[in-house]
Image 1 (cartoon, rainbow, N blue to C red):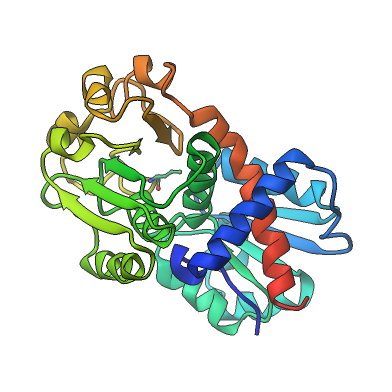
Image 2 (cartoon, helix red, strand yellow):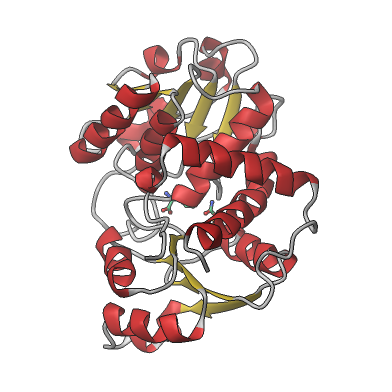
Length: 308
Ligand code: CP
Ligand code: NVA
């Protein structure tokens, strides 16, 4: 049976730590392994992408593999071929599929019938490659993860909030999510994160006051208030979020030496100010770079796990 990476808790705490160790090693020696030699990886995008697309294409090439990057909107999948039939066919051609799509249930359907590893490159509900990268970036700056406090400010119901809850608790972190009413995380995801936290000593907390939420935090994370696909959902995605902007005043309440992450693209002047994004606390460019190393580690590890 192939291993998949569809959500952050598809890996155990020990597996997550091993992945991060491997990512660190690959960062130091980017061309040191050709673990994907002779393998082909399809990366399919049904939504826009800059970082994910480039980092997977470059990473697969560096590992000696062959990337096939496709706009999913141009595939038969975008007309009427089922996800399952697409998955069966792709399993005969390529060695893994990386997919950016809409509902999580779409990628679950892909994985159910696939005989090759399937990787979530962002769904409406989760963005596990980004959260793994965020952990790598935090560990690089802080030397550890367990026991640190990460405060996420913004849309608590989006993919980043959900993934950081699961990934952070898997790493033994204390994850706080502050979001407006109506934009709180999926209660099931919070339960899953709490279950992980019980194993690792971490915690998951939902907050309403941004000042309290960032008090003493080691890491502040934000993300767009309007995720891809939500542009016309009729909700006010500005007014209720204004108080959650990551700016210098809010950053002052965090721990000394706190760092700031944003998966990007950033909407400067909305969820984050220029001053913070371009300031000394910002780790966003390292974070963007680390997509490459974390995803290479993930692919190498998945092939190893799947005995392929
Ligand atoms: N952070 C991230 O996933 O960026 P892209 O949408 O550019 O891939
Ligand atoms: N929450 C954002 C992340 C972009 C990388 C979105 O889904 O659009």
